Each structure stands twice: as C-alpha cells, then as structure tokens.
Length: 203
Ligand code: GRF
Image 1 (cartoon, rainbow, N blue to C red):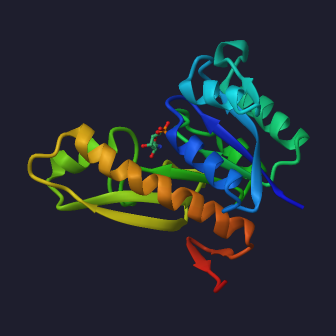
Image 2: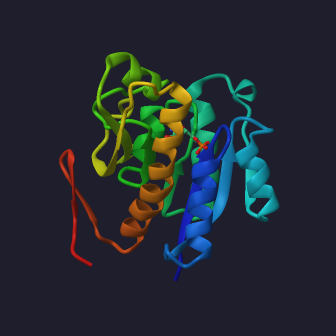
Image 3: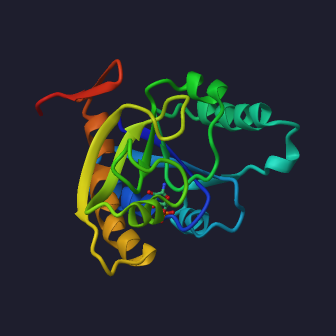
C-alpha cells in the first residue's frame, strides 16, 4: 500500500511541488493526500487545489491559543491516516504538543547547513557571517527550532557577489533534490533515528 503524506505550507510551495512531482514520477512510494495551509491564498495551496489534492485552510484567529490551533490540525491529519508530515515553507513553530503526537514522523527542509543559521532569513545570515559554503538540510522535527536529527544535507558555495536572492536560488535547487530523496528513504523504511542521529540503511 502506498504511503500517505501531508504537506504543511504557508507560501510559494516550490518544495511541495518538487515532492508532488517525485511522487507522480514514482520516485517516492507514497502520495500527497493532504495539504494544510495557514495562508488561504498561498501559491502552494493554489497548486495543491489544481492538482486535486484535499487542501485545508486553518485560520489561527479561529482558535484561542497555539495549542488548540495545532490540535485541530493534528486531528485532521490523524483522521486521514497520514504516515509522514512534510513541512515545506510552513511559517509557524509547531507546539511541543503537536510534535509529540507525531514523533519521528515530521520532516522539515531548511536553507542552511544546520546547526548553522537556524530560524528566519538563513541565506542572509550566511552572507552576513561571511561563510564560503552554505546549503540545505532535511531533518526530523523535534521540539526545538530547526534542531531535530539531520537526514540529508547538500552544500553550495557562497560567492562574494552573492545576494540573498542569488544564494537562495542556488540553495533551492538542492532543496528540490534532497527533500524528495529524504522522503523516499523514509518510505523505503531506511531511516532509523538513534538519539540525535539518523542512520540510513543500505537499500
Ligand atoms: C525554503 O527555502 C525552505 O527551505 C524554507 O522555506 C522556503 C520555502 O520555499 N523552509 P517554498 O515555499 O518551498 O518554495
């Protein structure tokens, strides 16, 4: 039976589309059956609707606090028997309550070589710091910010004349390559979390 993925997004959705493409091309033995957004008109959500994927919009204002908001989303995910939750430009920090409900089953992509430059504007942080290399990281989500066990990373050079945009673009190409790859490994049952490390079994 095919695995079932939910994607959470807030914006552009290019990583979501890369994942979708990989599932459709049979590169991932799973399908994206649910997209959840906290921004009604997010371009990523528009794409999901066009693809005919069930797309749910949750408005933070409709809930008294972060936990009840997250629990409503978690309920929707559980009702649909989701195996893996992929964060793809989801601009909210998940509550510990949410993370605990799906332990080891939430992935995120971050545009830097973690643990360097967590949080927002990772590309700008890399440029301002003066590093020669940055990149992308796919990791499991724990209760911290961008701090969970690392699954895959890709390195890109940082050039002296880079702007936030040119670096972001170079990193994004790698994101679109390693995120589907990490999801594939998950559904092939090849990822094992031991403490803060992820071990990848031979295929
Ligand atoms: C990506 O750079 C990702 O690493 C970060 O947010 C951005 C989302 O881009 N978490 P997109 O919405 O997938 O195009």
